[in-house]
Length: 115
Length: 116
Image (tube, rainbow over all chains, first blue to last red; front, side, top):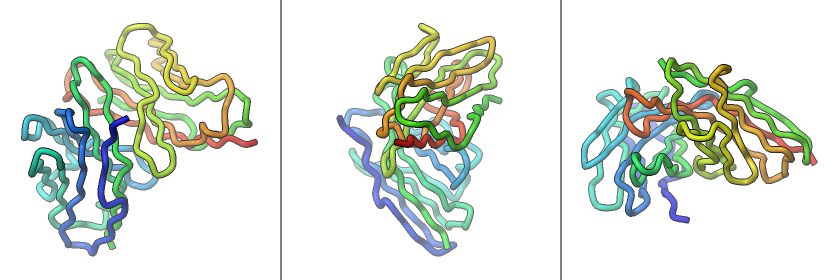
């Protein structure tokens, strides 16, 4: 079965540094998402992306966050100046068509640790 | 606002025993409901979903869930646990009205352990 791939699996960074989390969605999918899960807490929606623009974002997704689809395959999440509270597992997801198919495919996540 | 509550962060069952993972949602309008599973070092995989058709939904790996509007519940069950079912299970909702497509609201997850 096709899968969403995320790199790296673990990322350690110093507070205040910029990080870029990378995702390769499934090739024919059109909708892309980022979610995150802080240890012991719920998986939280960050942002959805369709047709090269953000379609929705949560309160968490402030000006420190940005997303980009720089080419036909990658989908990235950038955190401009990381804070300790950004430490979490970040999941990328993609979907083919949300009218015909409710199914989101998730990657295995990037564990971000901010020191 | 929509929310999801999963009762029990850890559930332990013996191999062959019934699995019951509880999920309750809060919504004035019944939403779409999902169960996802996460095996170690893997992404979230869709187990099953309810989208206003049959209230008893069958998923992969022998799991099923029943939507009960009167109880605002969507509990996940499996008649006989297998060692390979050990994983973390997440209940999620997506509002039918309002919110974007794909903006899932997740519960905190329940870690299922299966004892031999």
